[in-house]
Length: 203
Image (cartoon, rainbow, N blue to C red; front, side, top):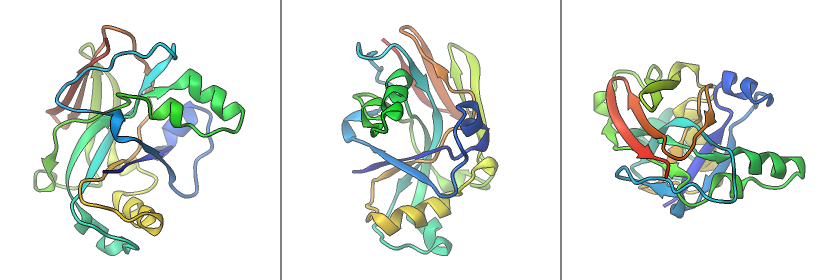
């Protein structure tokens, strides 16, 4: 099982971090050990002092494919959820300053909480999905997939140029603006519309 992540896929998020808006999808991966399911908590690692939450719509691949044309990409996922791309921002800044890869900042244990999946039949329009993150009962991130720079189908077509997509792979599709630090004791809940799909804590 592979976990693909897309960076800077919402223009306002790129701007809030003073990053350029990409001309093609910015791809990175997380290891399987990053996944947190069933409400399991993140145990705040000692090597970072600044972990940010980044809420994202997550696609679950439902069939194997390679070199998928965009017009057929919708056939390759049939369930979605929300997930958090935790980022050790202080570590990421250090790595970026040296021109080094981001894996330590993005792929540490527990860095990819993921919620319960719902079938696409419950979604009226994948290009108009409201989603949000609440931290300790307060809304901290809100987004809508109409603002994606690269749609779900474009992402699948792009990724499949370089990787075979396998049934069960995940694609984290990018975060809207509003990323911010978490601290020990925080409770996070992720929603699509009014349906709560994700809940986790920081311990």
